[in-house]
Image (cartoon, rainbow, N blue to C red):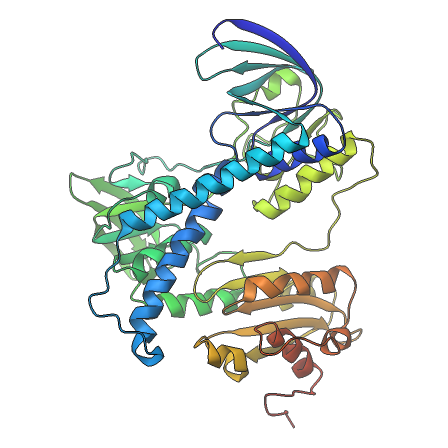
Length: 474
């Protein structure tokens, strides 16, 4: 693309991650001209360096752990069992490539045009595209959708260099196992990848500044995961501040402070994962006239995904929390349909969230404390997986499902679950909340047996004090 060119399109989509490619596909389906620009790989962070590759590794680690821990009981002989990370990486990369090609096919079939390169606004209706070969192209557009995602937050003094200190993408691509790993940040990535490496034999320590792992999550879910990680041999250090980092050719030394005092933790490598911020700094917002929060990087949007310039939209991590791919999917579709003239809005009562650890953690709606702050009279019931037939059959009795509902109206306000399959049935709970269902509605819905989703129905029975598979309270 050497040289300078110019083209025009009805809608320019900047970023080919979940929000961007969904917007482009939907616009194409609705017969609207659309040009998607992506500077790296189609699929964005989620498909290439996040959701999909991490779950591929977690699956491999889970299989390895299960065979080691339960093989003899299950009749599976595992003498000489080894974990080959390089082979696992080959399988992971094949999965990611297949998914990426699938998204490209969907874009093509919808009639969306795709260009490689980095785009930035040069005015309210113009952008410049710099291609992989350095060529520049002016793009004139009627509408634009910003879907640039997020970038990891960096800490001064703890800079990622790809050798001793790694970010998530680099950790996901390791070809050999380190003997030990420090994880600085106890959020979703820190817990998921920390658990994977612990499962396959790496000595892992997780350091979190706040009082619990997974800050902001339902406290009982955090406690359940902390127990599981500790049982796996992970050292969990919450309410601990990292103050200084030293690194040499073979190790890192992390100085930390907590209520117990100051000490130094040492490991072969450190995984820095302390959060993300919207990747909008290089977008040319000032030239276009788009309002941007300088602290978070978010572009403010309304419920039609429009920024302060009604013809420029923002979706996914570029516009607001939570930074979840499925939220970005919906926002991309909303932006596309609004551009196409459909009466669509981004309206929801709640967004489900899943942490793909073992046990799996899933949450949707309010906790009891949140419900109280919003004026409800909440009451909760918690059904244990230990009373669930499917859990015994699958050797997955650790966990529970908690139901939060209004004690006056019976309206379901939230569901929080820890255990195998939790991420699969949390959507049912979300639908119940969106539809204004009561606990009686949920209890009266027949659930297939034996499944983990029965724990949701059983929690409803328990809330009503009509339990079927635990002893009724007097």
